[in-house]
Length: 242
Image (cartoon, rainbow, N blue to C red; front, side, top):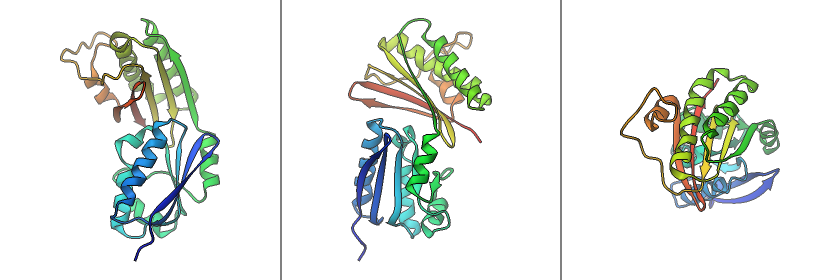
């Protein structure tokens, strides 16, 4: 009989460490673990480190279950770190089951937290005024150049212009722009005070910045999405880098 799946939460320097114990199988445990990790990310307390050192994930079926949890769209908003030895059976089956590039793996929680300590992350509060999109483009451009991902300036500034302009035109609330360099991608997010979700526009004008619609966002970003919060919503996008 497999060992019951349990986990504990601890905060370390603003990041949440989820220590998983027991066997990952097809029972109700993985679904509950999914809800726990999602709630951690929803609090925006930083990255989530999932420590699988004492978890049994040796079969392809169990790895597929865990991979679906970690690859869920809601979890793309934060940095998930699988903590296990790269040469272990767990690491091997997780890499084999991954639908995209596997999540970063570290031998210990300490090494994962050290990697997060050097993560680049910028945030700025913007007013819902006509100059907000220009300011957002400047922030994104400076960040990309500073972080040596200048090749992402063009797509990232197009996307951030659309996201910020949508807030100015529709939400009309204060907004927070986040720009972060993750191990595998550049991440943008705009949080505002309106619960209304973004919808594609029927008219797309290619000659006006901010009037191009979410179809252009879909084309420029590798992936994008949104989620509701108790005080509004967050619209995010990511761009892969080497």
